[in-house]
Image 1 (tube, rainbow, N blue to C red):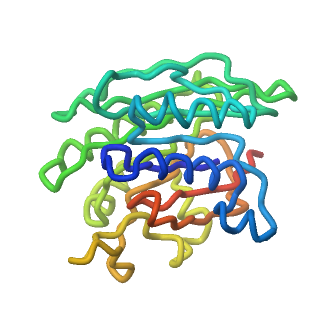
Image 2: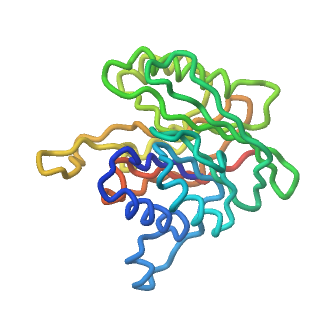
Image 3: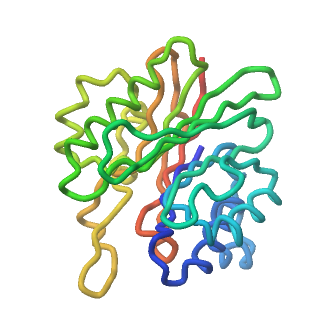
Length: 254
């Protein structure tokens, strides 16, 4: 599984960046690496995207991902303007249905997106994504939204559930709420690899990422009712595409 904030609200080179993002996701490498013949990795089976906008949804994401065998929800743009989140899945998973809803406490009107998936072997999976409240002033709303996602993950009547998304949670905020949440964090289950902790970096005066001051905004949370194993956990940095790194995990369910 992979989650990535595509920085779609930044209009500079947005079409080119979306093209490069599709290549990175589908081929598992940059276009230059592909041309040079470097080995690629298989594409994720499930992708969650944040900061999708109508322009790149129609021109880039939908045609490229569908050509690679993915089904998308929402299949059509969710908004005429502004950004929204999307989930894509490919075989062996079939996307059965999707829905979205408003986060209860959100001055920025943020929403969650959920899909139900069926594996070729008959097993089911529920995947949720969201882009939680931004800005330093949104701390209280982020905590409330994380608790809301935690309740969704804890639904005893739902199939195994994974959340992939941009939480915007600062380290101090995470420490303050972590003990009150039931969900499992894939980063913790993976042994907290330091190299793959930060997923967003502020930029210096020249617009370059300051890699010594990163934040773990993007997270993968797992429902507390099942035994999960994180077999691989890593970030993919593509600063020419987005100010966020893509976060990828290979999960196994006992």
